Image (tube, rainbow, N blue to C red; front, side, top):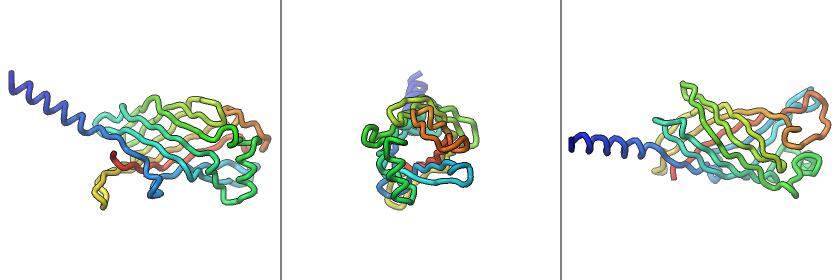
Length: 188
């Protein structure tokens, strides 16, 4: 009986040791939050947010317990054109003076197999909080050359701007924005 108790304790401790918290590596520029939206229905306009931070928890043996928290400085938007960026930051769109931060907090993760899953959570953008789902792929993980341990994920989602109170007439083809997220984290 004593051997069984020691075995169970070792097993539980070993499992708990697998779960880890990671800091998203924005300092090393190994994480990206990008977007694209159709420009009048004729082409794609791409952009990114340069200033964000966050953490995620991940356990390969219990991926359903994964979680993510991200804060984005919305004024760090960069679409590679200064005048357009100024307009996108204005009250017509993101209104960064009134709503300087966007956040995402996960509420659940559903593993789908083969390193894929659905991450659900609450996105707060433009002062409005709505649920979104992100299709996630585990890119991989392992030791880095600096003695740390890293884990990387890629994700995509799409939502209507009007859902977040952004109602600028861009034409019917330009009402949804696609987000592409590539997050590499360093184990804390």
